[in-house]
Image (cartoon, rainbow, N blue to C red; front, side, top):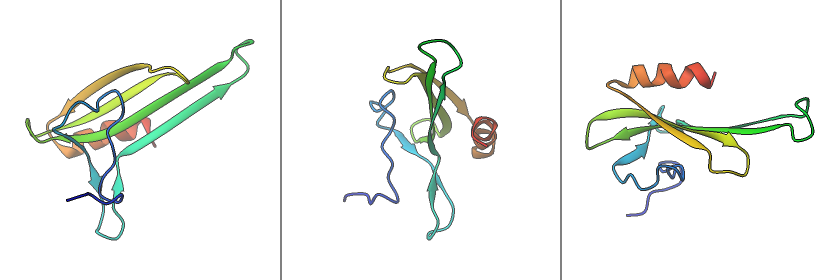
Length: 103
């Protein structure tokens, strides 16, 4: 069975080999929203090359370990960047961490 686009968001490229991870959705059936964000920053005040950075975040559920994980990938636009996984035992803890960066 194929998942529809309102119930499935692909994992970020830095984590797509983790088959047990699924992007977490919150909300009612009519207004489900994924915990998935891609932010960019361009600041030309920092010299000839400036700052061209990105920050990608997803909250996923790990069905093997019953954990919520905040996945982050960040770096210069056009590069793969670095990544980090921060596990949490509860959805509330993970949501609080997610909200500290994406307000």
